[in-house]
Image 1 (tube, rainbow, N blue to C red):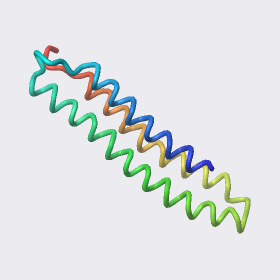
Image 2: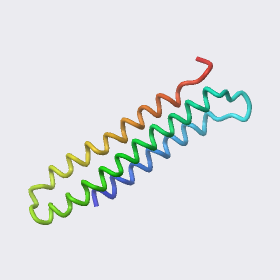
Image 3: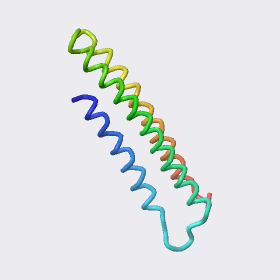
Image 4: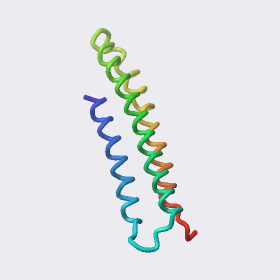
Length: 105
């Protein structure tokens, strides 16, 4: 159940970025720089979430199978899952920094 919960957190990261971007979109005075910054923000978070999800899926599948054969491997599996989740967290941080940039600064 741990890999399923960690994969669910990746969706929350995307939701956070989408809320941050949606607050800054305005019908008027929305410059091209802001649009590209928001696109880059979404891509950074989305692609890092995709790679973290793939890593969590591979590690979760093999880790659960290995844990069934030898229970000592549970701690190692959790550590590798945490490092895989860190990939998406880095993408979230980069996305927040990029969405904070605006053409008025």
